[in-house]
Amino acid sequence: MRIAIVGSGYVGLVSGVCLAAKGHDVTCVDLRNDVVAQLNVGVPHIHERGLPELLKSVLASRRFRATTDLHASIEIAEIALIAVGTPSENGAIDLSAVRQCARQIGAYLATIPHHLSVVVKSTVIPGTTDTMVRKELERSSGKKLGAFGLGMNPEFLREGEAIEDFMEPDRIVIGQEDERTLERLEELYAPWNCDKVRVNSRTAEMIKYANNAILATQISIVNELANLCVAVGGVDALDVMRGVHLDKRWSPITPSGRLAPQILTYLVPGCGFGGSCFPKDVEALRTHGESLGLPMNMLNAVLDVNAAQPGQIVSTLERKCGPLFGRRILVLGLSFKPDTDDVRESASIKIVRDLLRVEADVKCYDPLATDNFKLAIGIAANRIRFSSDWRREVEWAEIVIIATRTQEYGELASLCVAGKTVFDARRLISPAAVPTADYVTIGRRLN
Image: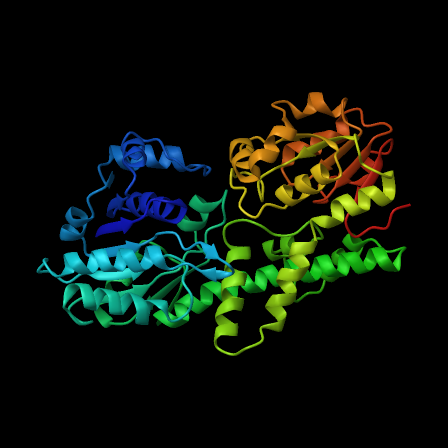
C-alpha cells in the first residue's frame, strides 16, 4: 500500500521504516529540511536500537523516502497517518499540531479525486478523532466523511525496543469510523499475525491512555509501599515484591514451569517513571476527566507519588550521610530509562537539581543522553561536570547513585567501592555484591 506519514518524530519514523520493511511504500513528511535530508541518506535524527540499519535497508529497496512536500505525498497515498507531536501544556494535551495537520490534509483532499483514509497515530484524548479531526477535515475539504475515510491506530512502542515492538507486536488496535478505512487498515497490517482489536476511533484512543495509566499506577503503588516499608522498618520492599510476584495471577504456573511476565518489571521499587508517555498521558487523562466533571482521585495520587519519589534520593542520603554540601557525588544515568537518549521527565533531572540545591559536588555520566540532559537542565549544567568514563570517576566519588537500570552499571560491584556509599535507586545490584560499601536503596530502611 502507499502510505504517507505526517511527522517523522519517534512514532512516525519508527512506524514508517517498519511498514516499509513489511513491503509497503512509505513517504515520511516533515517540515524540517535538515531532518528530511538526513533521513534520505540513511541517518536517523533519533536514537533507537536497530533503526539506522533498518532505515538504510528500506531506502535501498526504494520503499521509503522523506520529503517536505505534503501535497505530493497525499496525491498518491491510500492512507495518511498523522503522527505529529501532542505535548503537554499545564497538564492538558496540546492538539494544535494535530489540528493544523488535519486542516492541511483537508485542503489537499479538496483537490484529489481518489478516496483517502486519514488515520490518527498520535496519542490524543478520547473523542479527538471523530470530533475535532473530522470537523477540520470536512471544513477544509468541503467533503463529508464517506468521501474520505477516518480512523485511529495507537502505538504501543517502548523507547529502546520500538523496532522490536512494531515488528513483533502483542496486539494491534484498529479504530475506524467507516468500513473502507477498516478494510485498508486490515490490509496495512495483514503481514502481522497477532491479536487485532477492531473498535471505533474513540475506543482506540481510550485503550492507549488506559494502558499507560494502569502501568503508571503499578509503578506508583509499588513506590508508595516501598516508602511504607522504610517507615515500618525491618522490611525490604524488594523481598515484599518478590513474594507478590509469585502470586500465580502475576506469574502463572504452567506444565513447563513458572512464567515471569515482563509486567513484573513495573512492580519493582525505584525513583519513579518518566519519559514522553507516562507522565504526559496520565496528566492528560486526569485533566480530561476533570473537564468532564470527574474527580480522578486515582490518577491524582499516581502523579503525586511519582512527583515526590525522586526526592527520596537526597532526603535519604542526608539522613544517612549528613549534609551533602561539598560531597563528591557521581550520578550514573541521565535518561528516563536505559538504551535511550530521551531525558523527558527523567527522574535524574530532579535528583541532580536536588543535589545542586544542597551544593553537592556533582559529576554525571550517561552513554547516550548527556547532550539532551544539558539542554533539559539549562544553565544549571554549568555547575555539573560530565564524564565520558564513569568507571574512572568511581575512585573520585564519595557517593555513587545508580539512577537508571543500565546494565553496564552492574560493573560497579567489581570496582573498588570500599568506604563509599552506593545508592542503587533501581535495584540493579545486590547489597552482597558490594560488601565493603554502604549500600542504600529505596524501600529498605537504613542501618
